[in-house]
Structure formats: C-alpha cells, structure tokens
Image (tube, rainbow, N blue to C red):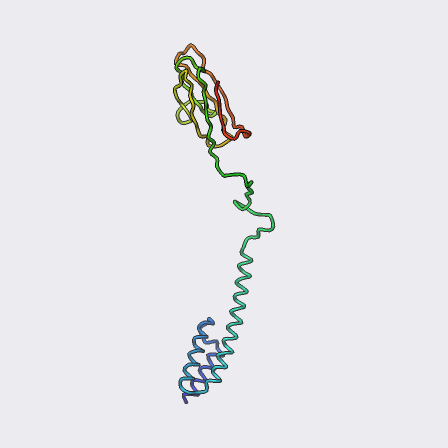
Amino acid sequence: MKKLIVTLISLLLTACGGGSGDSQGQARINSTTVSTASDKGQNSSVNAAQAQGNNDTEAGSDNESQEGSAQQSEDMQPEQDNGSLEGMEAVVVDEAFDFRTDVPVAVSIAPGVVNNRAFINICPQEATLTNDDTCFLRAPIDNNGLFVQIVLPHSEQKLKAEIWYYSTDVDPLVYSWEFDGAQQQQIWELN
C-alpha cells in the first residue's frame, strides 16, 4: 500500500508541476521522492527516470529563461552605435585637453614705472567697481616694482590694471591684458 501511495504522489506531483510554481521547488520534491523510494527498496528506476525527465525539462526551461533575460538586457542597454548619444556620453574631448581651468598669470611691474608710492588693482576688465570681491590683486607698489603671480578662473578672463597714486594730482595708469594662447606661460609685463 505504501508503494502505491508513494507512486501516486510522485505521479500527481509530476503531472501538476509540484504545486510550488518554481523549478527549484520541483527539483527538491523529485529528489526527495527518489531518495525516499530508494531508501525503502522500492522501484527506484521508475522514480529515477521520472526525476531525470523533470530535470531535463527544468534545464530546458532554465536555458530559455537565461536566453530571455539576456535578450531583455540587450534591449534595455542604450544603443551607442547610432550617434544619438546624450549627456556626458556625447562630449568629445581632444586628447591634449587636461581639464584644468585655472590659469596662472605672472604679473611683473618693472622698477621705475612709478616714482612715488602707488597702489595697484588688477580686476576683471568688465568690473565697474574696484573692491575686494571683484579684484584678483590689490597691493601697494613703489619705485622698486612688483612681481606677483595671480590665478584666473579661466582663460577667457580679460583683465585691467589700474595704478593709483596717493596724490590726487596724477591720473591713474590703466593697462589691459587678455590670454595669449601662443605663450606657454602667461606673463603680463607692465612697463
């Protein structure tokens, strides 16, 4: 009687798919059935054949699901061959570009440019007010000159230098500068 019940249960489980809904659940049930039947000395060859058939079916469905998921992932990947890239993928940068935007500028005021004490402001050319927030340099100078290095935020920055004398009788000296791509190092000489 026990043989009949075990055989019927294994046939029902095989015919119904095991009721677990996934292939791993069926594999566990079938392997349990096979080991139970072989432990009791019953007809293990029939159960083993059924288990083998189920494993072959599971392997086939696993391959199909892997192929289906591979196809899905290919469909979800953006196409890069069609030339319609967006965002950072569309940016083409010359290999020589080093992604640095800061531009160091050496400012040299020759000795003797001013006879008396004076004050220099180096600001953006379009700046209307000369104050600490807009200027790159504000410093006193004398007849010995001055050498200083300033750093600009980008190469498109145009500068103006105004040398103001402490005396109100003398008009300020005004100079202008812009980036020179031909120079390796940016130098601004005020003579």
